[in-house]
Image (cartoon, rainbow, N blue to C red):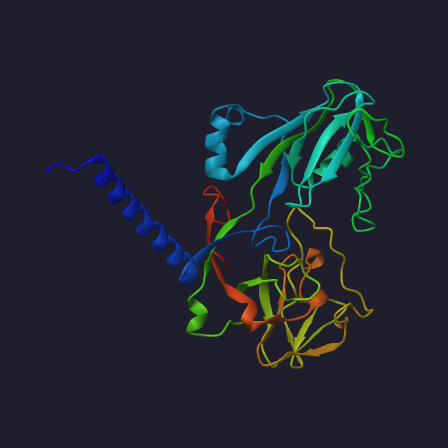
Length: 326
């Protein structure tokens, strides 16, 4: 007897349910994908960032730009002033990026959504030495790129200090580059404990001083029951022994994070002070040590919060960091 359409539909549904179940089990127990959100692990791993490009080629035109994005994670974007006006930027709380647009007292251009480090390029290209682009909420963390968002469509721009631009003036042009996507090994640490220098992904839920409900990625610097000290010169001292120093920033992107200082931080860690870790605690730091919000600020990572070991970068494919994470 020939199968009915209903029978075929049931078979496909059963297959789909099994495939989804296998994929979910694989993610839950073996390898889970994770997108690097910031530049705190540069140069080992890159978060979403902006790369200037003033002279785009054929690969930045449709439809080839989509193939370029698929292979390299780079999406070409630019903003040219469509009329005389002022440049504004607005930080979005949902993903930490910004939208940039031009506005006048009567109209407002379309928004272009880009990584927030594009502000550095805007500041460099538009500053005439008399104005400062101000950024709401960033008090003193990146003094050269501050913005104030006070613009509503159709309303006067009172109280703002944006850059003024002429029609046709290029404000920025370049690549909105996706952060590295990595596979997190969830089973490896069932057979051994995390080791020093392993790259750890952990949940922030329940850790004071961190955004809740997300995950961070850092490098394991000190292990349970060790005593760690970081000197003002950057030396890492563990149980009285000087270890290799925290890696300095070598990447192009800098996060708006202050350096630790000799004064005591919110969670009790101070330069030249010693911190004794508990039985199941890990001290983790970003490789981009001058621009990383890590255990120096909010304390140790409890073992129960650990998700797994960042094993390899799998996307973008055209990526100097593709492959095993070291």
